[in-house]
Length: 418
Image (cartoon, rainbow, N blue to C red):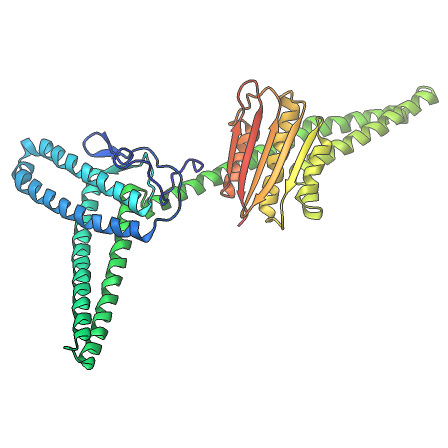
């Protein structure tokens, strides 16, 4: 859900109108083009200045287009028989104007928008109305700024010629500085408004992002509940089918030894079997307890707990641990269970002969990778891996499973530590 979510703000566009083109999806909706490339850094002020000036030109172009379209199609839009075709013509022009504005924001301001985000025709028309209004106002502000620069030049020339007295010049400088400040503040506010309405049109709005976040949290909570229930069922099976059966066998051995109907040697053999059975019961009980929660996490830390996983595994496990500083306890627990479940699956089901584990912290993210040389074909929707998905998603992390037929199987997880 989250691993492929498109970024809304970034800094690159490999094409002008090709990538900014809109593909029609009926009359009322359309999808944007493909995602732009990776960010290449913030745009420079000359690029932003050129983009602002072009925004004034495109706003004037949009105003003229709306004026012509309103004059030519106004009557046709009011007549029901021609409304659909006239609306189609209007939306075709609106789509092209929106594509031009999207390209301008991407090229000169470094914005990056989702490639498959669908926008309604009503939303496009509302955006263009605001864009034309703000662009024309921005053009007026730029014109006032240019006029102020000319007046400043005239004032400077008058001071150099001596035709302007210093008190009058000082008053003009103070007034001009105040107007320049207001002018620049207006340009800054209009630029911020332009960026905001572009994000709301070409990408998810704040309300849509909030709804998506609520949906993700609800899904992760449900996944955690399912994972806890599945873990409880597995523990119950381990206790009932494993330890309980062994305890029954131990009781039978002790009963036969207590009755002592055979020779002393036979009774001693029964006692030895009972002792070995008790050792096996303790080992299996310890294994079940580790699957519930490893006490080594609290006493020794994640590295030692993962070392215990390697020791209990039936195949060689090579572990690389590169983590500086302390980790939050929920992150340590999730990381342990991701590695433990992945290693156990490799040992039991994949016919692997070796497993490599890599745990690295980079900044505020803990990255895990478990790779085995088994036959592959792991099912991400199985109870074990789906439980891991739930654990990781509950921490806003990402879990990926790559297990083609024939292997190898690679399980990676990213857990935020902040």
